[in-house]
Length: 170
Image 1 (cartoon, helix red, strand yellow):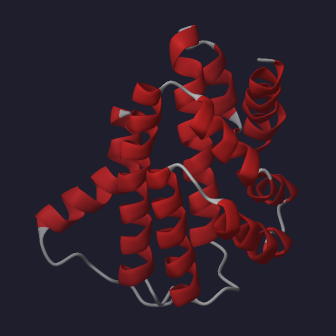
Image 2 (image 1 turned 90 degrees about the horizontal axis):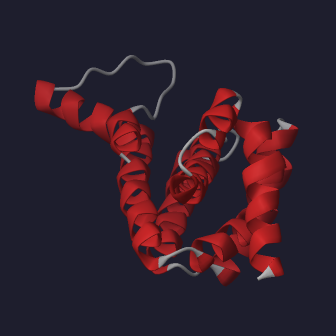
């Protein structure tokens, strides 16, 4: 439908280009079938990363919003939570592109619900891992002035997989 194309086009185009630098160029050369799920997954990951990195919001509040966003992604519905997220986090973004991404979250969720169900499941699965890594970040690195080491090498392996490896695998 025309609506479906315009939502995806506006997000895959100007929004993705403004928040991704070189990733935007890479998505354009992927096989057509992969472009939408990869671009959509990236936008959701960038939005959740923006929430996690909004340091003028207390850590517990950011963690609460990340959990709510993760649940909304998993359920494919957001409604009130997204409205609250947009109103509470968009004005706090100093970067105009990140503000535009947070403001576009209702359209991002519309796109998530329009894509093929198997692609949606893949996007939801990778975002579950990324969100878990971001929540671990907030918990482990609460104090930005204090260096914290992982206790076991397995913890480091899991951490790096959640915050980076899962996206590469996706």
